[in-house]
Amino acid sequence: MSSVIDDALTLPIGGLASQIDPLQPEDSLRVAAREMFDHGLPLVPVANGLELLGIVDGSVLSRAMAAGTGPDSAVAQFAVPAVVLPTWATGAEALRTFETTGASALVVVDANGLVAGVLTPAHLYGHRGDRHMYGKIGGMATPFGVYLTNGAVSGGVGPLALVATGVLMFSCFLLAATLAQGGASFLPSTVTSRPWFDGALQAFTLVLFLLGIRSLPLAGVHAAEHMVVHAIERGEDLKPEIVSRMPRVHPRCGTNLAIGATVFLGILSAPWIPNQEFRLLTALVVTIAVWRPLGAFVQYWFTTRPPTRTQVELGIQAGTQILARIESSPVLVPGVGVRLMRSGLFQIMLGATLAQFVVWAVYESFRVPMAWRVF
Image (cartoon, rainbow, N blue to C red; front, side, top):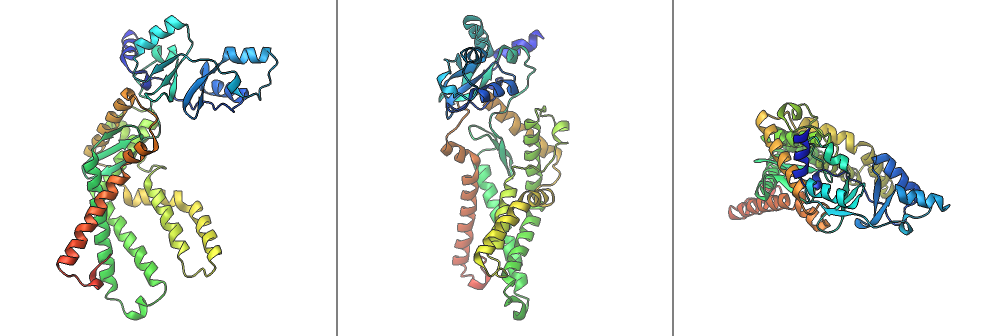
């Protein structure tokens, strides 16, 4: 046990503390008591947003009760100063703080003074090497490996790999659209002139695009990304034999959003529903009903496939890296701009835009007829 304790004393406390959403000034003492009970903590932080204002602990509750204060009173008037340490402080520093202040728990804040968690002596003594995740970890599959981020830090491949993903996905779409449009050119005008034909052509293009994604190694990397995130969320060790048995469908995958948007826009533009208000209502109802199960279906059969051992190991490398960076990061609650830049969406959009520009330049250079162009 001593080696385990020594290990905890050398780690940054940002990776040891329990994550808890702070109370807001208008929350009641009843909510404070419930949060302490639910999380098994001796105190809960009170914050304005995430900026620490103080704490409510057992002594605060007992004094309020003794004074006849009702449980519906706001916590703002009862909050007391907190003993605070930054996320990068070590377990040894936390232990000295416990000894000198007599505090039962410390509030852990990041470099911006925002609440990141609560630390008790039990977190030091009972630490078993578990890595605690801050925020929701998501990621992207790239041709060169897995990219993971929690919005504040990232792990795995770099931005150029994300740009390459944008190029690859646009190339798949271009090939799918070209094949679909080429096949349509052989159909008689009695078919292509039908009002439903454009929608059918778009649906066929989407199916070809999804089949193209499934055929690429990218689908295996995508599965490995999901499996690593599942393992982290469940507190599992990132070992190949454990990660390999995790589900490859994830409820927060961007595929779900893409499928939801496709269903909504497809119904919204449907010519067979003449009334615009009814069409909008139908699109909303159907999208809400099917976007998650349909997204999971598309993930399982098209955008992921069982990963190879190498792909699983690439995912584990990214997972190990981001967990280490989370534990040592001075900022755990990033701003909106940082979160967006870390998401990888801009890099993928850049890659797709660059690929589209290259294709446009080829069209123009070789004077490709408009009828042969797909955009």
